[in-house]
Length: 117
Length: 156
Image (cartoon, rainbow over all chains, first blue to last red; front, side):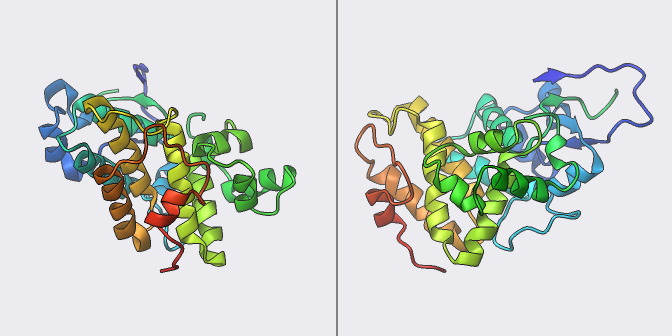
């Protein structure tokens, strides 16, 4: 996973989004996502249509029964894995699960920090 | 896998076009012809740069709902997940590293399971951890004996 450093970014760049849900910031902090490794470092740029699709909205109508919305899915995967592991997950283990999920959703594997370019 | 191209345009139409191009009339038929193949490989085969595993999954669930075979699909998704995460089958020893591998597989599977089957999926995971299958256990499809015992076909 690369961290992008595009200079002169601004107009026309797809907006940034947190991959690790902000609502669970504290949960992630307890597992090592603090300071320079806070969840704010793990954002990606995504076009609006893609971003909407991943959150279950936009034009795509899913089978009623499928819970694919990203935030719900990733927290479920992480928390259930933690219960089954019988101990708190390490930061790397969290990132491993997140990376696997990003590939399955075809989310660009290039992290960029929330602040700055 | 590309940088987000899977979500461009009418991906559903694209998905089904690719399925038909390969001679199948449903995603389910395509997937059934590739038992125990991980989801990401199914997606790669259908569209290396422009289809995502999660799209294949959503299509499979939509079809399963219509044909009332969701439970079978839930077993099938576990089989594919285990195939991806535990290619050598169930670990002989559940040390910390192996325990995490199993936990990761079960967690990802659980996250892919519809709400209607959440509780039962949890029970399957608990059962597998409480009474581990024989070392090397690798289910080859949704009709695996052990899986059928743990998650029989009774539509919710």
